[in-house]
Structure formats: C-alpha cells, structure tokens
Length: 114
Image 1 (cartoon, one colour):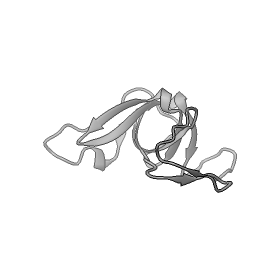
Image 2 (cartoon, one colour):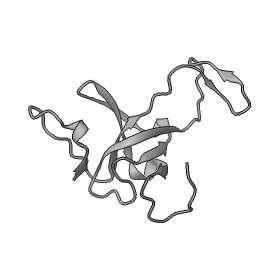
Image 3 (cartoon, helix red, strand yellow):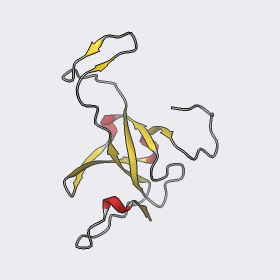
Image 4 (cartoon, one colour):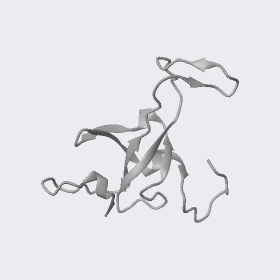
C-alpha cells in the first residue's frame, strides 16, 4: 500500500488503496496552443489521435514492480479509466499499459533521460 498524502488528506474520507497492478495518476493537462519542433503552431482544439500522454503517479498497487509514487508515466489515452476524487481528475492504468517511466530514482534501464 503506497499512496500520496495529497489523495487522502481529509480525515472524513477513506484513504485510497490501489489494488493489484493498478496505478493512479494525475494527468498533466497541456492547455492552450503548442508548437511543434518545426515551429508550426498547433491550436488547443486540434486532436491528435495516436498521441501518448504523460501523467504523474500518486498511488500504486501492491503488485506494481517498476513504478513509484512521484514518477511520470507515458501511456496511451485509450488504455485508461478516468475517476474524480475530491474534485480532481485522475486516471487509472495497469502497469502493463505504461510505455515509459521518467523517474528521479532510476535503478537501471537504458540511461535515457526524458
């Protein structure tokens, strides 16, 4: 049972415990316009169908092996479940649906920095 205090800070509510290989993450919302590397302006209303998303992990289940609270994970938006907790939006993912992990505490891996 590993969870972040920010998810269950109110004593009147029950703490959240993730089960099995599930990961609870807060998706980083990129608001407004953005620019491509080539300098092309992409409006906020443009939808990119096969674009992966980043989220910050706030809780992990007991069978999650490689992801820790505070890591940033890269995932396909089609492989998520959305949930609202205390007015904040979170996503629930399976560990196997995570494509990459950006972490401050890399124990091994390729040595690439995202």
